[in-house]
Length: 374
Image 1: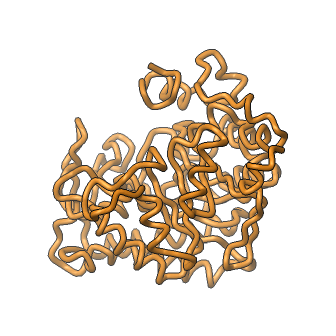
Image 2: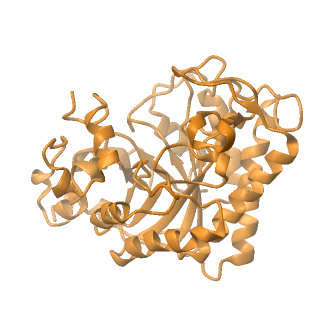
């Protein structure tokens, strides 16, 4: 190995005692490839197996915690106990390659397609549609439904424990339900679940507290609980960087095991809310200091990109698209072959890259998402 990259391969220990063999993590990426009944498919297992050997930790694609939280076709389920063997199948495959297995749990809220949820009824914090084309106006959730969904996050965490995962990641990013409660765009409530920024924090923090309670009650070994968030929204009103720093403070106080920033480019700077020319990652890392580890992500393709991301101060890095493009990314650097890293998708390499067909079709028909697809 080139000695300049040794920092990528230093071990890392979470405060709960769980150790990672290096600083590189597989980011959660939806693959649209589960079976129609919500079970994990063989194609998904093969896809993860191919990418789990070099990284220290794999965060799975999101799994829905209630039937009305299913956000995509081909998403695997975690909403009932019958799914534990399916969840276990994936955890076992990941861990067999030497990586920690983290189950990402979520509810899609207003981003759920009507044909994916019971009776076609889409729900959210408030009856406000998203600004994407073709969006529907969701029904505002009642208080008892909100409390039921919070409990559902906890029960899915319990299933993750029973299925042998090393932890879960609460998906509070990318415009899904947890973010919808935090956002002033999607949350126009006037009860305890909305209004002021503090009240908009109520749902995310309630989910964290419920998950932590369930983990304390059921986990027999140290179990990771992380949280992923998007730093800003383009909408007005929307989440701004100063809002996110308040969220970060609140989450840090909950003594989570990590925070995971969701963005397309680790170098991206803030749009609004702070007067700062540094990247969002640097701002967030400065805010948390050494109180909680931050996972940085976004457009890390070359080994040099990873070094630059580490220089922001974050201790852990997640790769999504790059591990699809080159599943051997970590091993190549480890073996001094970083010059051989592939950074553009080979449109003729689906079988060699072990990518399920639904995900492959999404890649090749979405120009600009992956380098190499114009």
